[in-house]
Image (cartoon, rainbow, N blue to C red; front, side, top):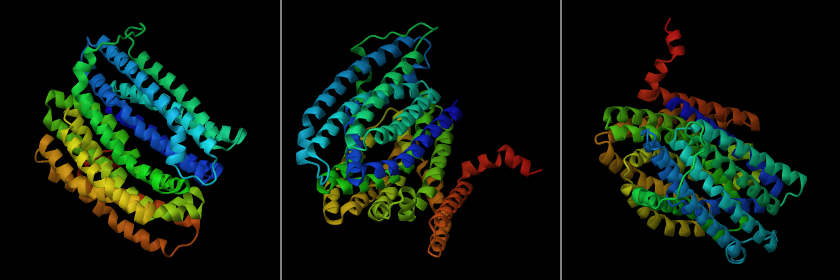
Length: 502
């Protein structure tokens, strides 16, 4: 079950990864840098408005996983879902109305446009607000499917929606007009269809003996889950502040065109979390189960194996991309101007995101214990520190300043966070985690990185440079895999390895 769920999550994220890097250069080409900056602002709005989730999605995931262990909890799961989705409906209506009414103020007093008409920006923001109101509940339903360990169904729905939305956007921009308003209209349509479809998928999964699932709104649900949900809401708010403060600062202090370049850098820098998150989310229900059964030895073994796997798939390859970011962006977009403007910010953001990705599995371990106090404490300190630093560095160093502040924040908060997290939940395991999931993957990839950097300085030609970057990444990942003890043992026990022994 775990292998199938991890595979489904990796396939889903792989498509998300491919689709983003397929569509972004086309959006940039069809809309232009300034309009693409507004697309980036839409992503920022979506991230900011995610605070409205109030911890519901994470709580639904956890409760669905917990209640799945009970044969008599079918109706309780339905009531939980009905209560949460009705609450979500009210919240999303408020968001849609607030963004519709506030769009003119955002256009006039926040964004800095030079070529886009104010009326078009206002209308686009209004449509984006409604699109966001449709997209947010989808996360709730996906969380429910994940908690039921139906990652295959969840990822199929996400892949279908991503393809439908992405290719549909290109089609309507080509058939009608390549404007930001056309883009926003299609986002609204695609999100509405997705929300209806994924809702049906979750309710269908809650049927018993083919009978239609019916749930009821119950206040008792909030009484039973408020502590965990409120903690998750606090974590969500802090996460939003940390992940969106850079984009909000750039959108306010710099032009929409610069926001477009920063969005490009941020998209490239999202690779580590795109790779790490599906692995951790697939393991989370198993973590919860092992914690509930107090099976510490199995939990430790699964935890280290997962951490090492995440380190291998994120650290080496992403360090390669960070080192060669200008080449990668140029090869990706075909725009030398975009590559030059976004490269340094992308490298700095990638460094911070790699560190962030290494904390994803430990973060889910804390959630499995139902304890998020440490996460809240670290998040609050980070917000207090990063906000003034972000404003100062963006003011004096532009896009690179935003990336630098993110890297500094992660460098300062990650070591103490990981130390105290292990001390609280897996005492005595911090040293092993540091050695096997951080030090070894990084050190093993350094020789390949240095060799690749030296070779690249001697090679001209766009595709030859791409080939060298790819080879460097593969070699770095291979060296890291061989240096990770659990992964090395797994590789030695594969059928292919056993055949080589004969």
